[in-house]
Length: 141
Image (cartoon, rainbow, N blue to C red; front, side, top):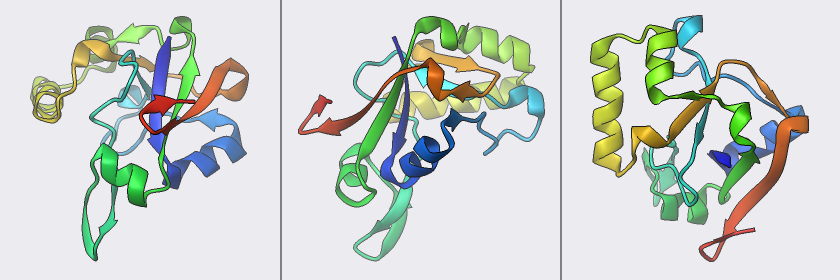
C-alpha cells in the first residue's frame, strides 16, 4: 500500500473534487509535478503544513496539525497507482542535483526517508482510492 498524507485544511477540497492533482508548489516545470505518496505506514514527515499556533505562523508538527489544522488524513492506494520511486522520479523529472540534494537533506532533517517516496505523474482519481483515513488517538481509522 501507498499513502498520500494531508491535513484537515486540504481534505475537504480533495474529497469534493475526487482527485489528487500533481503538486505544483515548488515544482515550476511540468515534468517535476507529481502526486506524492509514501510507503511509511504511519506518517510522512515531509508533508508541509503551516498554520497559526498561539498567534505565531509556523510550520506545524504532526501533533500541531492534529490539534489546530483539523487533523491529519491519508488516502490509501494500491502500489501500482504510484509506480515511480524516488530515483525514478529524479531521472524522469530531470530534477537538478542541487534540488535533489536539498529535498534529501530536508527529508533527513525531518526524520523522513526518500526510499519511501513514490509518485504518479498523472492525477489520481477517487475510483483508485482504497480508503480515506484519519489519525485518531494514534490509530488510522
